[in-house]
Length: 212
Image (cartoon, rainbow, N blue to C red; front, side, top):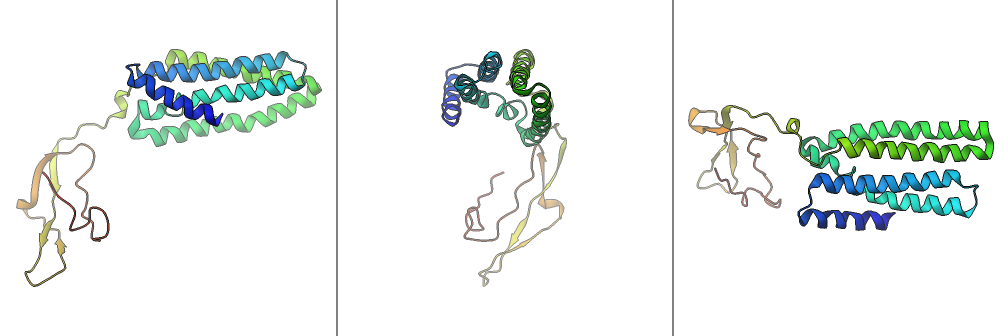
């Protein structure tokens, strides 16, 4: 699976660089990976056990690595500004299934014995296929309008002033709120970054250039 994840990511980037839309690429890998896994799980449900089931499960997990290039990075496509929040929410919801799965498996195997594993694979396969159908119709790789920050009106951005005596080696930064230290700028995302005070850091006092 690890090899498939790496190769799938490279292939997805190659397709995008050749003009494929992000939505098509995400649906191709997500639906292709999970649909293949679901099919192999359904086949495993119809088997009577033995090495064949182990081989089917191995192949199912392997091809599922393709889906990493779909859903796993889709948060960055639709809402890069809130990708971490969306990842946390979706992963939290997905964890619910991980909590219910062992309980369901325990109940099915206790109620139906060895045959209960067929029901386990059947349910897992159907869940995968239903997820594929939903993502095929509703999935998207386009940035959503709600992911953009609201435009702000022009405001006052405070710019620091640097005072240094001729005989002093150290630089002292003073924040001055006089009117001449205000610039009329359009604020979008972030204010001007505060200056670093350590020379050994990249962008330190002696390295930082300010352009307005």
